[in-house]
Image (cartoon, rainbow, N blue to C red):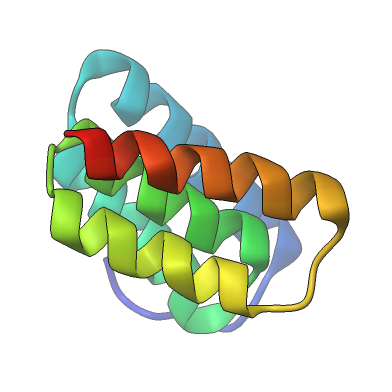
Length: 93
C-alpha cells in the first residue's frame, strides 16, 4: 500500500480493513495495512494492534518485543496491567 498523507478518514478505513483481515485470518495483509497506518499516523493503539497480530501469527519474540516497547511508554495503570498480563501469556508460549 502506498504511503499517503495523514488523513483521519483514510486511516479509519484502513483500520476497518485491518479488523476484517484479522477476522478472516489474513494476518500478513493486516500487518501490511497497520504498518501503512503507523507510517503516516503513529498511535499507541495501532502499535498494540501490530503486537496482537504478532501473537496471532505466533511470532512470540516479535510480539514480546512489541509489548515491552509499549510497556516502556507512559500509560495508565490499567494499560500497564493489561499489557503485562499479555506479555506473561506470550512468555508461557
